[in-house]
View (spheres, rainbow, N blue to C red):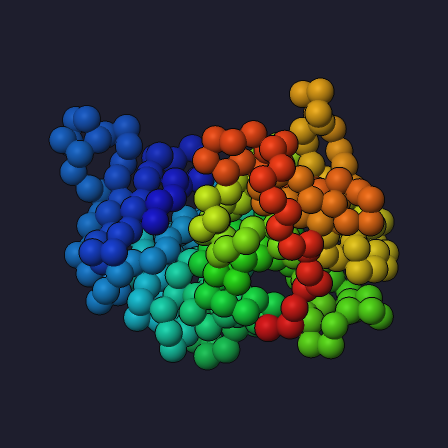
Length: 308
């Protein structure tokens, strides 16, 4: 696990954690002068593998701006100037916790996920509370990574061994009438283009709702939900986009002439091009160097978001 500090006007810090359980924080500018010595080092803060860590994203972070999670089901908070002892800690799961993320817009909103197939939302000010302030259900496997969107409050995404990358909106209204019973109202889109577990993903820092994802199918996807999934929210009212809008409609860059183009996708391509209802697939994909336009086989069409 790796993360850069984001506080402006302060030292540039890099934190790392690994399967050996060690947590290290470096002051990057001083690394050459200090011979690479760590600013903070904790040998085994979680008693096992350290699976995820995150700095607070706000320019004015809280007193303990580094959060870590691990195999012990604990979330611990660290003041990088305060030595190798956590400032506070909280049990967030009975199993392994694989990822932690701090909201860009709120100093106090933190998301965790792991082996329990649910995403927990916590308030940093309420670490004494036993239960999260929100729990998101929608995956059917281990949730390996969670990231908040950098451009809008309350929007986050998660990827799982179930092969899906879900986008959530904590401010979402009730789901459409045709949604499957038990589907979380916060689940606004589910990318189902990967044919195996999704290992990691990233939000674009310049284009809202543009994401890239990588999976155990050795594919890289660059994709974006169709604008009717999210643009209606800016006006305050959520449009009922129906089955296609919630599952498979995606915009993609990559016209056949090399220019940037957008296509409405009723299916999601992993390797090559798939079609459903006469429309092109909605993801640009590479699989170890082969061109995304090579049709090496059609993956299954995108499915509806499933209940957790």
